[in-house]
Length: 453
Image (tube, rainbow, N blue to C red; front, side, top):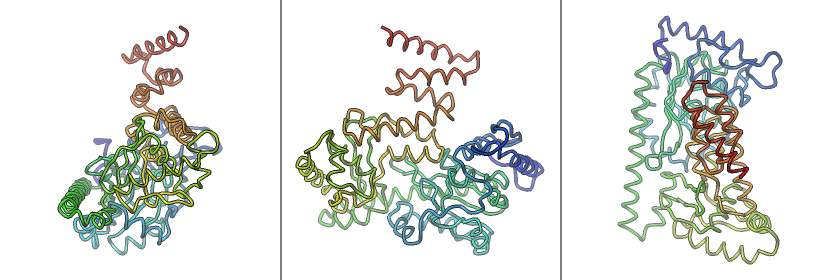
């Protein structure tokens, strides 16, 4: 195969051979799926697949995606979908997507889909005939097309790898998708670089032509630039007309993802509507806990997660008064509510991003986001529980499916300073004559010396 990164030219002999080998590979899929009878295999047993497809099949199998279920699961009903789309940053750039991709696709046999950062499709438009056909596999707005749900597909795999992807026919994990091909490109926040979503073209073989990938990448670049312009325009309007700050802040909801940075820092950074503030240690703990409980917590439950012991309700009330004043300066709409205590706006903590990535098998992206433990010095019971959960799940994902480079990067974190099992796992993966072995062995000797001194 001339190019292992992208499928061969549609209609070529090489493309036909890829499909033949992928179909043969599907005959061995049951051996990869946990809980199935028969011998357990690995993707190395499936020859002829592109490496990125082979690795995606392995992730899909480990995430227990089922290739024989025809339809993708519906993640949001219509009301939830409408509200979520209205507040999502990608809503702002949909006019660009429609002009550059959707309008030209109406008579071309192609569909254009835009999804969020966890693989849920938010908009699906294009050729009406193809839309009706796609409904049979639930390629519709509100459906979950992450790798964890449907296995290998361009939208889900592009998010899992954080890179442009083309998936052709039988390379899809789900057999009902074999008549389709697709190209997808992740959409990044123009300021933070975080993944906001994915833009996809789905259809016949033309959906994986080389020019299709270039078109989608150019469209995404244009849309990212437009989102940046919208933000700069809004910032200038707020600066010039401070009396209208509240109205401008309200209109900015669709331009930003409200975020909370907790990883590797003792004082969180809170960003709402494009404005950022550093929080006190206690306020960091409160928002870390509330962001993990979107349905809210009673005063007693929040106290239990903040303070070891009883009798802190008066202390909590005083802290909440101070926290409300801080958030009021950023956005009145984001001030925490009470009875129960909850956040009225969606707040995405970086710890939650790590968990989302791990859930869809994107452990390499999770490791990139992971800057260290959640509020490492906090002793609040709820924070300790969150910290241990994120750290444990990341470590387990890397040990079970991580590359040598990912494991070595994780080993540099403070929490992995004395992790012997991690380094032994690296030695098992490294070739016998790898020059990296010496450093790992020296590290093991250092750990033995320090722990026995």
